[in-house]
Length: 89
Image 1 (cartoon, one colour):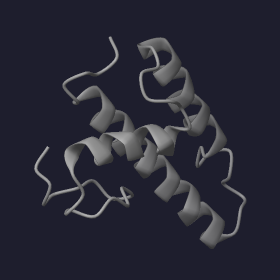
Image 2 (image 1 turned 30 degrees about the vertical axis):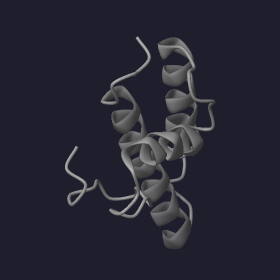
Image 3 (image 1 turned 90 degrees about the horizontal axis):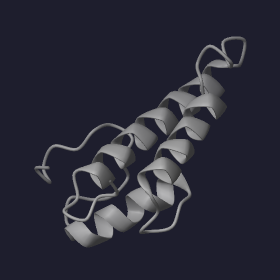
């Protein structure tokens, strides 16, 4: 991943080393480094369910915006982990 073009919602600054970026991605999904692919996918789906815009459709605009940001961060985190050299398989 080019460190100058980050997906929206990823709060790791461009100056952070790749290993720290991957570690942060695991933190965003609430799992430990080295989890299995099944555990990673389960954590990602849990975030998707929790912050689903459909589930929060009646929420105030600010809450809905926060949910969209969390979804974007989770999606970026999952992509970062899966693109890492030691990605779970």
